[in-house]
Length: 289
Length: 289
Image (tube, rainbow over all chains, first blue to last red; front, side, top):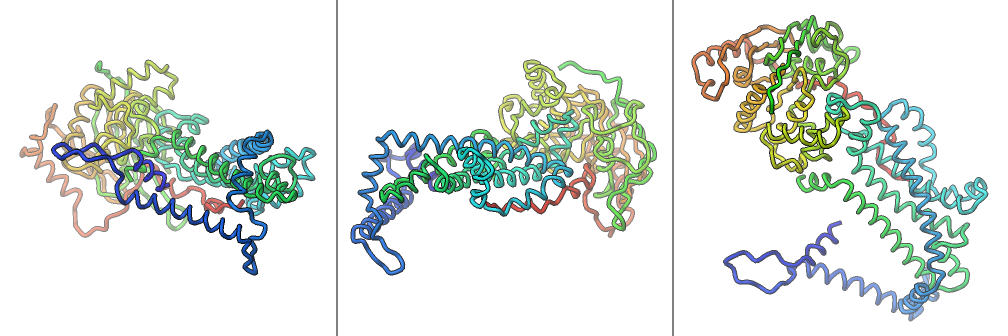
């Protein structure tokens, strides 16, 4: 969080010169420049280390780099994948699965969370089965999901759904429980009844918590999708990674990994960005606190 | 702003008893309180901290169910919260996600008043409380005094028959408190609604009220009913007059019959409802994947 902020602040240029002082040439504050340079150097050093280990086929006993492709080969394979029609096929399938699984998890998680957080009867009726299911990792559902859903596509969507729903549900419950009872009392005194209380008070009040859950859920969603695709997929970025292994296209493995990381990061950033714009008041409060 | 003459707003409280807690920790917060407020009267409930004056207000607002006794507004029994009885807390309960304008217009939105009408009526009240130009601000961008002005405007837009104020200026600094008291009297001079104002500040009660009801320490009972005969409009000079000090001495004697009494925790006008939130085992935010 703080790194992009400092970078953005650094890139935004220097503050306006104070009147009465001689104008200076624009330059970055020394502290930020050092931090940025250090980060870039560290990344470069990691790349060099990878290159050295891979090209020398280093064998260190418990770990071997004999089959690890060097960065140059990965770059080549990446460029090849970027220009091939296979890319959109793999990415398209993965995104469709994420879209369906994540959206249904968001709807179910927020909906159930609002009910459970607000009504004691809902908590008593719904929490026990959810408590039993919660500790089961989504990946452990894969065999049963394959048996339960005739379509592999749907079974993979189910796995991503299972991965995303619990963080969303828990954070929604948490957000609803934290709603200030005085706000609810005020809304009632001002004439708010029934479902409007949810729309006008509970949902906006819990929104920052809900977005935290949605952001964590997006991360777990990708994790589960990749596992599901490796086992039962035909297309998809996780499947591509696994297929590269079976076809001994070792550079492809790393390309797949990097793509998964990039898409996971981008989609989490998208959710955070949406949350940022959906809760503008929250930023003001944070700044004050 | 036209002057609205309310022909309604008579409050009758008959033998009100309120108890809190369960089992052995059950205690009586309010004991046999009876009084009547006539239309347009400004009454202050004065008493030491924890004496149950806020509890009486909470019962009138409809957030606390009395153990015994009757509460009537214009002859009708009070049953739950209603915009006719506007409640203002010590700490503001503005919706942090709504602008000043949308907060003030909230009551009209709940009544189904169309957008444009909501806007001009809210603007009118924002101007009345001296906040013209702050319509688009969020509550967190305002000072404590300004937040309470918005809170008052938000309650007044419903044209309540009775305004219930629970130490509304108790959290403000002395200077702002004086300004707000003056503002409240100015507003009340134009919108002659009945006001029940809870305070433990003798000066504040004498400056504002037509009548002061002095309450004893817990269980709260009314121990005196003092008419405040000062002319209106009032200003700060009143607080230095001989007759003001005579009445002040009378209040002091009532409130401190013997020193060394333990101070009690402040009671909320929402009763002990806040302590009854469901404690869910699932609310710990740990995430299984």
